[in-house]
Length: 133
Image 1 (spheres, rainbow, N blue to C red):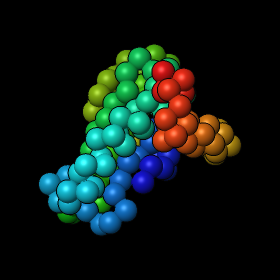
Image 2: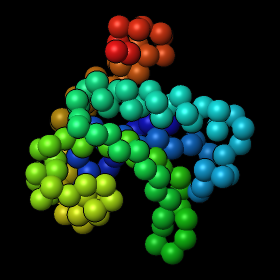
Image 3: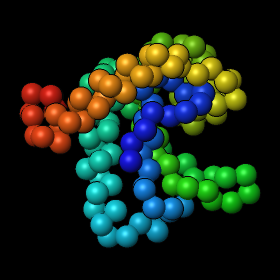
């Protein structure tokens, strides 16, 4: 599944996660593992097409309070604007600053982004090469 992140991350950050309860990549069955690579690639393509970031971060999260919770893979567009807002931080330092900051994207903007992302995912799934590039 792919959903827009809920919480204090920037607009366009998508979360890829298995439908079944899995807490680690090592627990994926063969079918899920085979689907993961192309899905991550397509998700990154959607994020890059819609956000035009300097970088697209892809990182795994699974932590709960005291134990692994559920596998989530964040696909985050990082633009110069996002970095500037957080003092030029990058990578995990940027994410560590964003999460407790509590600044969430506007719900209306998220809904617009998700509609555009759904259209682009459909085009990619249908093999429209013009939409892939």
